[in-house]
Image (cartoon, rainbow, N blue to C red; front, top):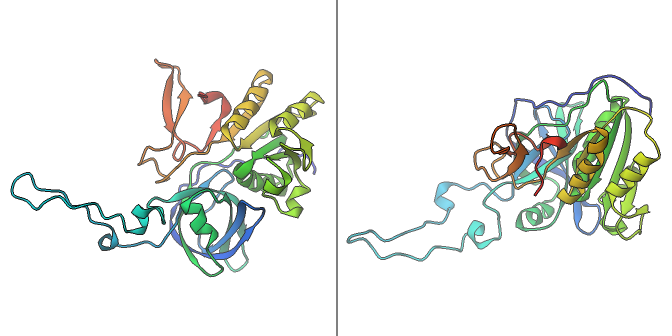
Length: 311
């Protein structure tokens, strides 16, 4: 790919909403990971690093939800046991939405939008998504969060992904490549059978696996460090998403050399808009006591590595 000094800035768009999407495909990439493709009309602009919240179940009215009855203080009816038969409370269908990073977007000639979601089946919500078939409707909220930013002074972009954090890195790498920017891309997985990439995508990334079954043996941040030691040829910015120990290791590698590093943090972002306060992240501040909380859904999920306090 040729080098370019064009600025590609992924700022936070203001438009968002609730949309009904149709499942276009929902295919397994490996035993635990799937690639979901959703189609809809008039979806707002999106940028790599952003996410959507999916309602993993059918939206129901207030009358369909369980009723909780407690005794009156004086003269009321006796307390009734909580009804745990409804899907939300029995654990079969999640009550709260689930956040999923965008792994790609295509604006089609007919005016429709296709969104890619790379996900791993780990619980009731993702299991519900894995059971969706072509033509099924899915309720989504988005786009949410901010996105990655690149600059004129950083002609080389280094993209590093691990696990389900590979999804936003695919979107970012494709967007930067389309803008004729130089991209060096790394991905890591436990093994070849746990790598959520298509055969075409595997040719674009430098692959590491913990067991050495595909690509270089070891951790993805180790491959990045070894590549840096061989000498970098251009000013670069680093972008990463994946398990927090991996991202902390990437940040620690970048810090001594003053390499710009942006990280997409993964949290349970149920509301996606800063209301539930469930996705707090500790960041540095100049004011006592030297730290404060920010919200991954509203202030992120992309943060500059230097502002994060790791625990």
